[in-house]
Length: 328
Image (cartoon, rainbow, N blue to C red; front, side):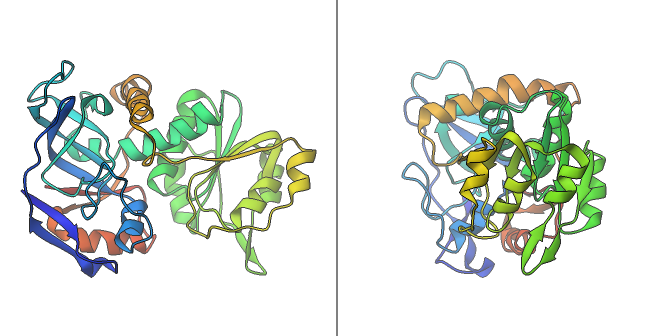
């Protein structure tokens, strides 16, 4: 089969299209004929050597989410059969024509979504729902603050907040991305000012809402202390991304005095049993909302698999809105 291989750590030029062996499913697994996969920032980090694949994934084939058809079934699988349309998060290997995964980590693609649309769903929407609702406890009537609102996870978060009756505020580097996010349900957008090298948005958030109940922190770095200032008492900050850096100067007294909660989350490195639970979120909590039209994938660009270099360069420039999808 064809697959995109990371030949060595480096820029997009280290990605090569190669012929690799077709995998065979083990007990409990299915093989999926991948029709589409989406590009994630974790793929870019893996390409440069900063985010190694976990032991259950190919070390040199990136790709964390897939959509396609089951074409082979391992021993003991009873819930899926050949021909079923499925999508889900995988530990790696998505930039290929096929991948073998545990059957219970997949969900059926809801009617109304094609494979390109389905590939843009799993990582972004599971990450957002799990972080905001399951772990962060976002509820109807509360206020969500989401950074990088034009990203895949950001566009998912805005829609999920609207679907459950929460209000969303978002930040982005350009007003254009904020306007596009408003069409997805964003209540108010903010382009942060930069003063002495640090982003400034907390005063605006508090003036608009009185403080955010939940912060979906997709940027990290200097955004974290400013996000703490932007939070309501007893607010919850969920750290998901570190695009702006892995360190921050945080006022711990603010956390104590206002009884804030700060915690991190990651999806790829979870053990199998937690990945099965994530697939259940996709199947039970999210797929019905897609079928009903309450949620929709946001696809920015579609490219063929052999254009993976171009896709990585585009995502690395932070200019897109939503997901970049590769078709096989």
